[in-house]
Image (cartoon, rainbow, N blue to C red; front, side, top):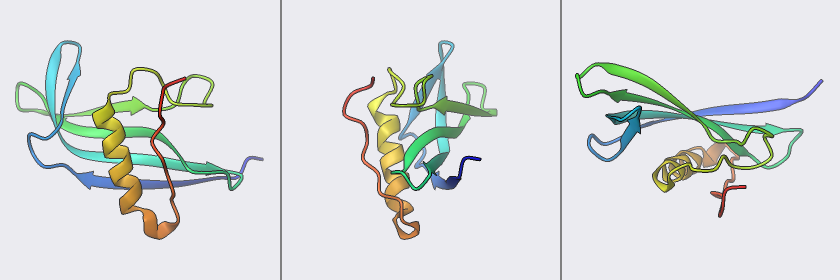
Length: 108
């Protein structure tokens, strides 16, 4: 059995500070929920970010971004730098629960 400790950190984003593009449409993100995990007391990794956003039609949508590559041993290629900044901000916000985190330098 694998011991997996998870922490979810939510952030309210200032309107207009982050635009996500999906299927050619722009979505204005207003909330992010970052999931961190530590398996067997290893260093914390960010697994995914769930964004709440408003679409061009004004309706709210949820967009999920997996941060780990398919082998789960490093970051997924192509994640925008702005998303890593959201993850780093969430990690800083969660520092009081023992999360120490450094954004990856390069994708695997």
